[in-house]
Image (tube, rainbow, N blue to C red; front, side):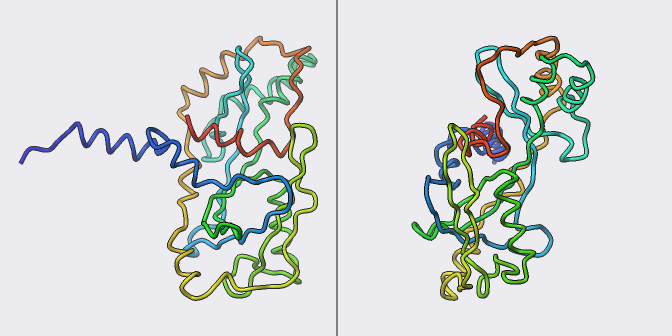
Length: 245
């Protein structure tokens, strides 16, 4: 029987671009943090070979039409990153417009982890910035909490989201003081079987794609732009837009 090359190409495309035709289903895997107080349980990874989180850095690149396109920083993979080269070079010119652009394309840390949404009971991917991530790591290094991801002795985490203009703030977020089980043995098993492949989200961008985006910015002035400098906690929806491309 002959191999259906068309079907194989389609499957290959789906494997390499999981956001393609099933984009809506893909985004449903992510936890959209509502304003207010939200209880989640951060889940451990399925084995000890990888951390419970995946880490990347994102360059936010302004576009001529006023929008922003996001690129994973290639340095996360130990590869040369043209956008980083431009970023550091802009600080050396002494021109205010170059400093403004440098602030916009600064590589900003992003972290992905699996969580159990206590309200819906669903396992989702939590996508957060460095400020909220520091709170999670800080709690795990605190002897009063320890490994808050442990299914039997861990702690639920309260994500408190408040908006400051267009940027979210998570200053009041903290683990619950009392430890608790993730659920029954069956519920724990079901949650662990439902873990999403977070480490595969940190993709290596093609060098030429990043170089092309970098070249379009050379000589560009953003002085006088009305767009505010992004905070370290940019909206989750903004970063998910990268995963849709």
